[in-house]
Amino acid sequence: MFVNVPGVTRRYGAIEAGGTKFVCAIGSGPDDVAAGERFPTLQPTETIEAVIDFFAAEVRDGGELDGIGISSFGPVELRPSHPQYGHITTTTKAGWEDTDLAGPVERALGAPVGFDTDVNGAALGEGRWGAAQGLDTFVYMTIGTGIGVGAVVGGNVAHGLVHPEMGHVIVCRRPGDEYQGACPFHRDCLEGMASGPTLEARFGQPGEDLAGSDGDEAVALIAWYVADGLRTIVYTLAPQRIVIGGGVAEMPGLLPAIRSRLVEILGGYPGLPEHARDDFVVATALDGLAGTYGAFVLAERAAGFPAT
Image (cartoon, rainbow, N blue to C red; front, top):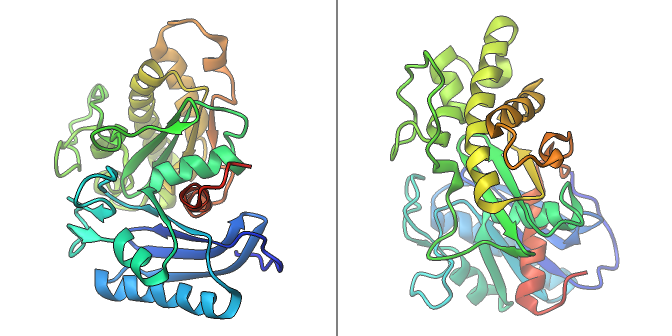
C-alpha cells in the first residue's frame, strides 16, 4: 500500500495511532512515501518502543526528520499549556488511559511533534489531498468501531477546551427501534446507535456480512441515525462538504441513503441546493489512509513550513 519514492525533499514522520494498529510512514504525502510499517496496538510501552525503533532506524539510514505528526485515537489532551498535553486520556482502550504518546516520541527522536485526534488528522488529509480539496470548512466522519468526527472550520481544525466529540450528539430514535444503544457513556447517542458494534448486536453478525433484507434494514437504520447526527452538524458548523469513511460506510447503498434522509430531515431549511447535491456527502478519497496522510500535515505544521 505504501509507494517507495526516492529523493524526499522534506522528511516527515507520520504516525496514525489506532486502537488496533499503529501505522507509521516516512515522506511528505500520498505521492511521496519512502517507508512505511504497521504495528499491532499492544500495551503502551512496547507499542511506543516499536514506533520509536522504526523511526530511529529510518533516521540512521536516511537522515533526520523535519517533523513528526501523530493522529491518535482518543480522547486526547490537545492544549499545549496543559501538563498532559500529548496524552491519550480517558480512553476505553485497556491499558492506554493517561498514556503520554507525543512526549516519548519527541524526546527519543528530537524532532518537533504535531499532535491531534485521528479524525482531525483524517480531515486534514482529505482537505490537502482527498475529497475536500479546495474547501476551508468541512467535516470528516468515520463510522466503524466508533463514530468520530473531525472538523475544519475556516481552514483550521476545530479545538477548544477539548476536541469536539460530534460522534456523541443526541439523535432521534427511529420509530419502533427498542435497541438500548452501545455507547458505554450515553447508551443511545449517535455512536451508540449507528457504529459497527450496534449492527453485530442487532443482527448477530458484522455489517459487511449482512445481505438481503437484513442488509437493507441495516442500511436504513444506519442512514437514519447518521443523517440525524449530520443535521446537527450542518446547522452548527455549516460545512461545505461532509466526507465519510470507515468500515461501516462501505456498506452498499449507505451513502445515497444518508444523503436522501438528510435532505428529508433538513425540511427545506435553510433551503440551500448544495445540501441536496451528490457531492455534499461523499466517500473518503484516501483509501483508509487519511489519518496517516493527515499526520504528514501535522508534521509539516509542527516543523513550521507553510502549507503547499
